[in-house]
Image (tube, helix red, strand yellow):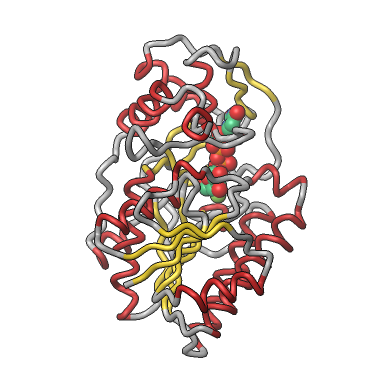
Length: 329
Ligand code: UFG
């Protein structure tokens, strides 16, 4: 089976590609390298440098490579940025996804896996959050994924394709010392905390400590990228039995302060922290129930402890203090 992977040069997509290759799939990576890295593209994958905004190019690529399935990782994915640039998300993120879906339908690609998000649940009624929870996106980013999920539901209703929407909670960790998290600019909590530990920044700013949580800082459910990649393979294999939607997390919530404390323990470095204002769009608490994918597909996270997740990210940081830069020179 051949799988076209958009965003296959990115942080999560590159790990998905590696798993697919290990499992014997043929892989075509489609990426514009705006956020991804050429060095993160698996050597056994075919690489197509292209932009999802260019519908004709997307069409030609699907015609040329005839994939059996698509994994759509490529996306703008920053909650805070989406509050400042709503159209980058509500227009561009949506348009890229729809361009791809339209080509998928026109070229009879019957299987589609969407990287969706916990930001669909800005104000959850109950924690942990299962798939029955009502959708109240926390930001234009969450709304853009909601629109794409709803489009896929229609395509399923119309028998145009089968899909899985995988709502990631907070992806973290490194799948090996060669594939890691390297964004420019970096905005995510854990990599910034590790940059402080490595001496590349002076301190970590905590975005608000007046939330209604156990220590006043936001609580998130951190899930290792390798476990996310496994969920993609299992979902792809299950699509023959119908479309599906899963929430993907470990089921444990950690506050921002707890993440910093754990990183101090793992790295042995002090990591200065300072409280600043809230960041608009941040829901106070997001913790997943992943019972559905566990019981339906037998998914079992291998990295369930935050210490292990942070240790894997720290190993990548130490091996690549300048991220992928040195690999691409
Ligand atoms: N945070 C800080 N200081 C920082 C960076 C982050 O206090 O310098 C806080 C944030 O306010 C938030 C938590 O740390 O409470 C995690 O923030 P991240 O930016 O690492 O991640 P988000 O929870 O904002 O978003 C991530 C992905 C989204 C996804 C979401 C799902 O970037 O794509 O997880 O929960 F939708």
